[in-house]
Amino acid sequence: MMPDTDSEQVYKFELPTPFPVGDVNVYLIKGERLTLVDAGPKTEEAWHSFLQQLNEVGYKPEDIEQIIITHHHPDHVGMLDFFSKDIPVYGHVFNSPWLVQDPQFMIKQAQFFEQILVEFGVDQRFMPYVKRLNDMLVYSCHRELTGVLKEGDKIDGLDNWRVLETPGHAQSHIVLYEEKSRVLIGGDLLLKHISPNPLLEPSMIEGVNDRPKPQLQLNESLAKLLELPISLVYSGHGENIVEVNDLITYRLKKQAERAEQVRKFIAEKPLTAFEVSKVLFPTIYYKQLMLTMSETVGQLDYLQEIGQIRVDISKNQHMYFVT
Image 1: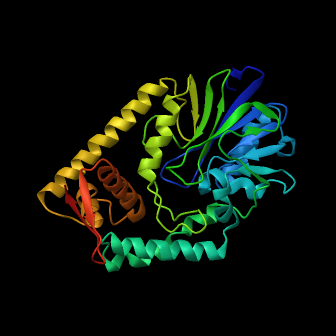
Image 2: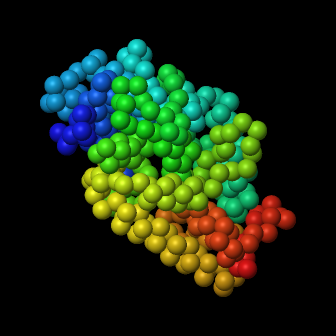
């Protein structure tokens, strides 16, 4: 059982996942409506762990009156399939195609990655990886949102909490902030022991084809937190965070240092994004292609944004140069 946030009590449950990140945290808020924030992966192991911990604080699944999700990744939404369809589910509108696993969206996503991987200079032998992009959705759900949440929204039954849009780790990412207690339920925006990946995703905005730049979004989302008085972050993985501003400042500093390392690689000779990735991640780039490419492209986007490098897009494979 966790501390009170004025009138509301927050319970933290740690659930096992089949992913390298390890356990995921979900939170039960005892407000006017009993609210679950995030839902864990769709595995029997996670569900039984959840039932046990829920029982320890005196509740059953049918007592939960609403569910809010911070973002669409399977380790945060999969168990939605184990809950009654009568329980309303709320989150950012960009969650929708992922949660219902819309076939047309999945085709669009595959086409997006096929195109950008060519532009980033990825070897053709890695292209079959695109067909395996959605393998992990077996741990996700098939569930529609009941309603959508956006920046500044207050949540029925949780009147003291408001929604902040915080894209970067996912285009659908939101966090919940309780001003009186200065508590944030932060999803994967800020983690104590690791930096969340700024993951490449197609644009979720109708008619916009330019890809989002998740590292820049993540930096902006973290900077948004620096403007708030936050005493405690309940994060999506690992321990609670108390020294919030110090950790954010450290994360931003380390990211800038990583980008400078990338700039030095390019200063030696022009490189494609894939060539940079192979230098940054020599032992794992071929095992975790999308994670390493997302990290690499994030650093390149950052360097472009601050004017340290430029990109030549005149050929199929884009080449990066120092300015």
